[in-house]
Image (cartoon, rainbow, N blue to C red; front, top):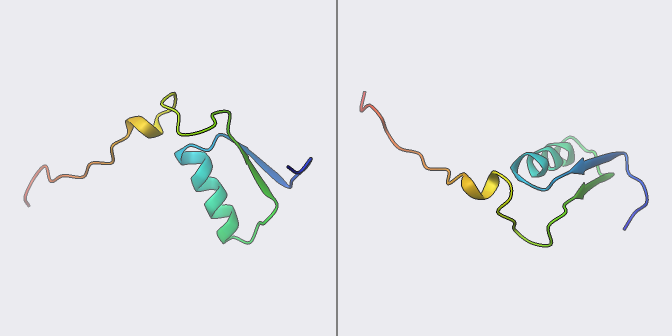
Length: 59
């Protein structure tokens, strides 16, 4: 693991992962994402967001 980086993101949830992706798309390659959990953890909001999309009004 590197001792330093231009950008350090704390948390690999939906927001941290999205930030890392956008930075990569912008050309920033010196990024470290830190995550406390060894695998998918249910402590954050990511696992509780099912991402359901449905129509409320058929207009």
